[in-house]
Length: 234
Image (cartoon, rainbow, N blue to C red; front, top):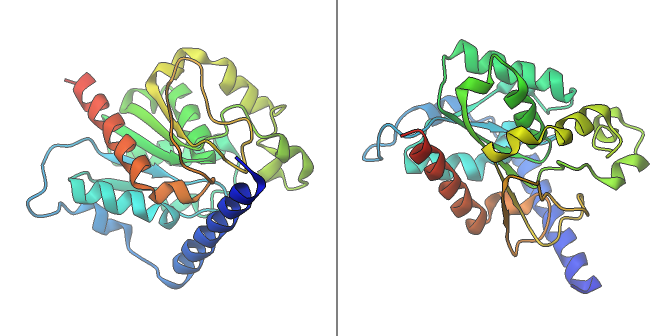
């Protein structure tokens, strides 16, 4: 991949970020709409919980929410996450409370970036792990990002490969079989990629860190991961 391709990928990625950040600020959609079944859609499908990345609200994952809701899934979001600036354990606690309060079981977590770390942390928690069927992570920094070392903000430095929580999660390979990691051939934020040993790794020809959220190829792989989780659940 040459510099022009990389530069174009960066440009399109941040155009996507700008659109959804502005839209999320101006348009306050009610996530309750995703809990109402779509007429004519299949019933009894696995519930989905969306977990966005850092500095992202749930609305950043609207393309995923719309896609899965049309397919017949009830799509849940944890509004208390806000812009997801807290620590991974703190955000995982909020998500765990949501799962418990709503009595959700057989849940598929569909996450972006930092959301993947929160999802894996949930799999380590005795209260939430039994409720989760599978974690589907899009462009998650499971091995960290070397770029995080250049930032002063704790919310970004938390992605350093040297971060204690990240290292602990990375060392826990027993959970990786419950994870599908979807990533592209070029992610400007995670130069090391999102490959995870023991997980179902899906490398697509997508480029960017944010824009793949709405890519049809990514949405198709999310569908496949959920179908596999539902099949395993019997």
